[in-house]
Amino acid sequence: MSPFEFFFSFYGLLLGLSVAVLATGAARAFKHRRTRPVGWLTPLLAVFVALDIATFLEAAWVNYRALPVSYGLLVGGLVVAVVYFIAAALVFPDDSDRPAPLDEHF
Image (cartoon, rainbow, N blue to C red; front, side, top):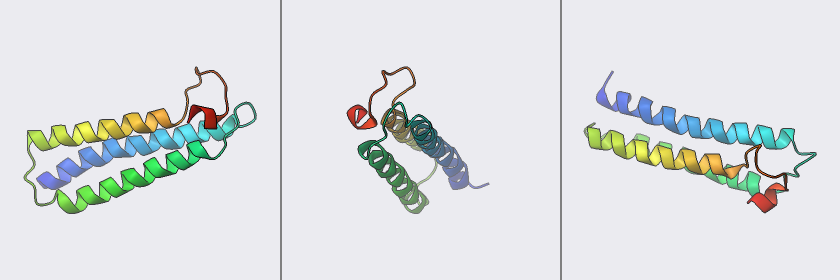
């Protein structure tokens, strides 16, 4: 395994968890659509965040090949991936939030 493959497996796993959080939130939202109307804004935000994650992952695949893998690159990738994870987690409300239409949550 090359250093780039090691870095990208770590980075891809973290960004993949962000997509999983989005998918889980969407499934939960559509499951409870009778008590909490879905609307348009929150699903469109989820699509935007998912496409942004895909775009960033593709850009990393193209641009990070030339960089030497170092501790700084791993920490930088970790910071970016955690920011995406937090953004993905905030798109859909938690079960503990008061029931309201998702457009109000947005």
